[in-house]
Image (cartoon, rainbow, N blue to C red):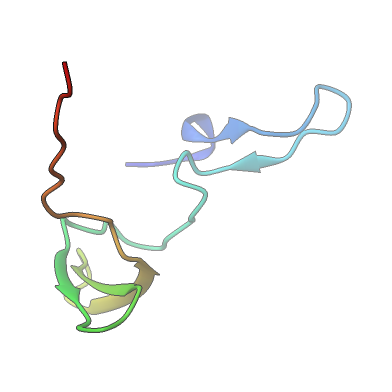
Length: 74
């Protein structure tokens, strides 16, 4: 169970700002997402199932993947 002892301080000792390590605070446990790459877009959609039986969506910047080629000139 996640509680106040699992938060990290991203503020200062004098002015603390306690947040979840991911920067996202959720009411339920989120499981590993299925990722949908949107064609001709810089956006991916992540589908998370939760411990409450829901499906949550999160749009994120698409990961740059593919093949890169180079030539070594001697």
